[in-house]
Image (cartoon, rainbow, N blue to C red; front, side, top):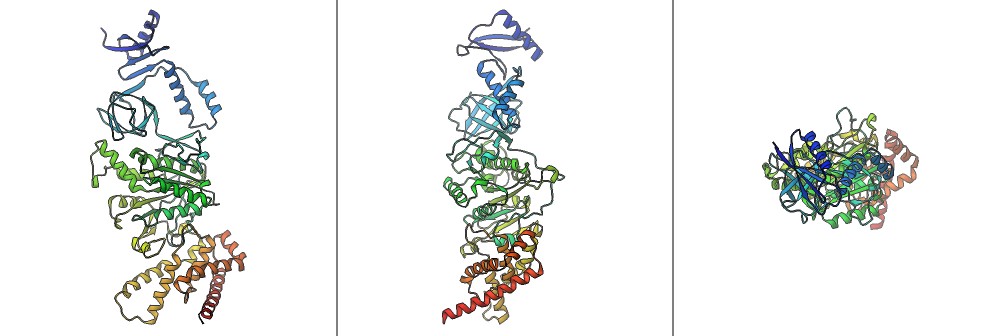
Length: 583
């Protein structure tokens, strides 16, 4: 007795020999006698298509080509050159008798498709729709599969057939991406033509284990004096940049990218939910300063669908890991993860996942921890590359105790807190020294910078206490007044112009001079001009000392005394000159 049905589609009815072959195939495959029903399909000019439940065996020219394309894509993870790739695929490809599992769209809308029938689909797998659009599995239940769509849903409707690809989501990687602006799928959006890259890497990948990592002890200089002197960032570190809207978070990230010029460091900037005009402006700024040649911009703009915003940081991380595994140093900026969390919350609610605190799903912590844990400094046995992450998070009214900020603070190795009141008072970058911290500390500094700026944080902390006290005191003694003036000079010293990162030797000269009270007597508005004259003059007068400090990364006591003595001479000349000008 026949226990099930199998449908055979073709334009011509199969003969007896063919029918017997299909019947034997069904018995061997399903271990039961299925009723074979022939269906006339005029559009199927050549070949056959056999459907058994959700399984499809497509022996038509289109199906055979699709199988061959899968073979090519599967092997493209290991090969870059298309000619050897095709030869290898052709030599090893065989007509597969495995079924092509399909499902049916039950409902589509808001960038989400609910699909029945894909019993063996896996989390993160790419699904192929009839109109060649793609989606990714993000929800698995007993009844259906929840899929987010990367393309428009115009060509998808209830009843559309969906095929499994057998591959997890991935992006093209390689040298060809440098200098380009691409979307989270790796497609160029800068109008410069296609990206000639055949490398492929999954966007989700396990983080390196503890044994595969090295201590973070090599500095990655931002060129920003307030950060490099007090909250240093090391290669392989994860340093959070946090603050309210419009407080200079992206500026710190872009200045850090610009400062990597000539330092053999690849940079990846991931824009999540930014305006397209802002991304274009950033790309132009990097291009103007010669930084785009070693930078990749992955842009999921505010007008893109939430699924693209969701995969954007993982896609950028996959592109960065390609270079890290080649032994290179890589810097990646996630701008910003608060918008990423909002996009994930939207997707989760549409997929009927239970909401938790602030309507975020319960796995929102894992969302960012599995991303940021991929940043590391690898051991020499693993190539010695590094991936340094600068995640950015936007706060509301300076509230760092909100859900997403506290989550990411607990994941990262420190944070740079930018304060609105400092920013609007003209202190830029508006780094709050009290709330900012680097858990790597002096290990990520050169000895020269560490020695030069040793007491800076302590001096600024004392200044903040005196400043608060000064608000309530009407009469101050001379010593307290001097400390206030000294602290004001340090704060003015830490102000830095946009896109003007300091070189290593400049930071050493400025810190040594300022902490030896070389700024005493100089008017606050004249400090930038004074520092420029000081650094330029010292580098010209003591070029050998500068070369030694830069090459060794160390500051001897003799060199320190040389800088302080020169700073004192410049201070005397400056005050004499200004006094004669006023007279």
